[in-house]
Length: 181
Image (cartoon, rainbow, N blue to C red; front, side, top):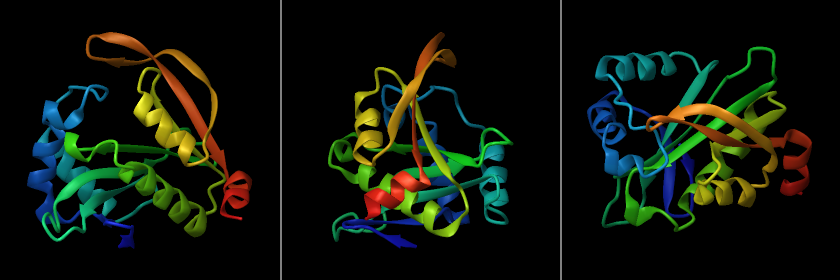
């Protein structure tokens, strides 16, 4: 478990999976930028089961509310995964499941915590965050965590019936070390 200011990050547990499947398949919980593709329950169960045995290719942390009123509620998730086999890097992804928790700085803190965790516990030299070019909130998270914009991948992703441009941000280990000071 990784403790934050008002929440903590922890791995997915088997008893979380039914609720997580519901949240990940809810259009309201996905917000306006994530794909509307439905996740097959069996596929998600296998994915989280594989993660519980090895974090070599991916790892998911749930953002768990620490406030007295909603203690233990799943607010969102942060995760990392290997993309290009020959890169010494990981891509970070994230999402909040409730609209009322967006815009409160929780995701920025969670991404910062995941970034610190990865640089402190692995030999990874590069972390990347990709988002739709019009996802200003996600862009702010990346910038506030010290990630630098490297460019735009035109037409790189298919979402909601059309090809979209993706903004690419990255943070190198030496840049993180300077930020950590």
